[in-house]
Figure 1 (cartoon, rainbow, N blue to C red):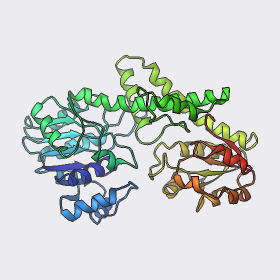
Figure 2: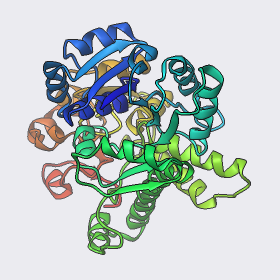
Figure 3: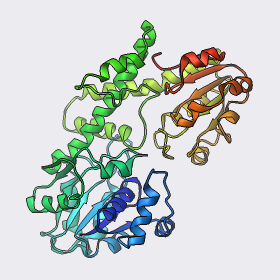
Figure 4: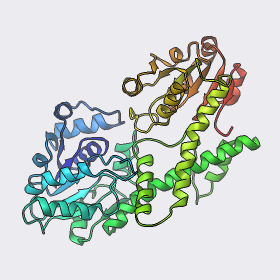
Length: 430
């Protein structure tokens, strides 16, 4: 099938490369000429496991190519995926200006019988919104169908998630068009749920809101564990064996972040508000997450002796999670910013996101490795769960720090082992 993908970010690039891997002819469009040029040579602008290999496969087979401009990709395509950004507005709602611009650009070149597929996370009602834009902007498009096909990709594991999905959700009022969309995934083994567009859009938001709820719940339990001298790792283990609950997303930390959970939770809350529903549960989830950042700053403050003014804090990790270079809504960055605002000197190291972080927070002192970041530190704060932090020489580290204090916001390290080496260790709920 001939496929166009509009947008070459995380979702668009993964969608394009993986559909080419499944045997389709894919043209992926972006507005950034430099990005397109690099992608056509196999240079990947994001850190994503498996992406370089699958893009190279697509380029070599000539089933994948990259162009500048949405219309150049959409002309002659059977299916057109819209994978552009939907950033959060000031009121919490998703900003649809990039979706609207893409729809207006492709409308004049769409072929009769083609299907336009909303892949980006878009508010409930977006399928109707895109259909209206197409109707306004193109020729007679009564034979062009709009469908919703939300993505469920985790950064760092996006290729794996696309090719091994838990489910494929298709929202479409036209059964024949829904079948065509499902045929794009015929090489994958996963349940296919065909529903109406509004339900498909809600499935995406509800899924992310539920996962955010699990994170806020276990963070609240972790804080209670500290108060009653329980170990949240043991509590989560006992909970996770219950098949109704499971182990996933029961790992306490500094709060959820990234490009999905904060934005999607706020967007779902906004949807509830404009429709007259008081979503108190989701408001609580968001508030617990906000307070978790403050809780981590308080732990670091206590470790520094009660004041951050002039304290040297060695920060390990800046990306919102390991195995990605994404800093969007990163708890590590939010905490680092609060440390800087309180007068701390922040010496930070991250294996992938350091250069971007320095641009976003000029006050950061970027260091070359974890040991360098810890040198002279009053507190070492583990804020991202990069695996390399597990295997450091902590006897060497003990000789580099000013004070032997570790605040492990990811529960990455072994408390007993740290204390044997002379460190004052503070985890989350331990």
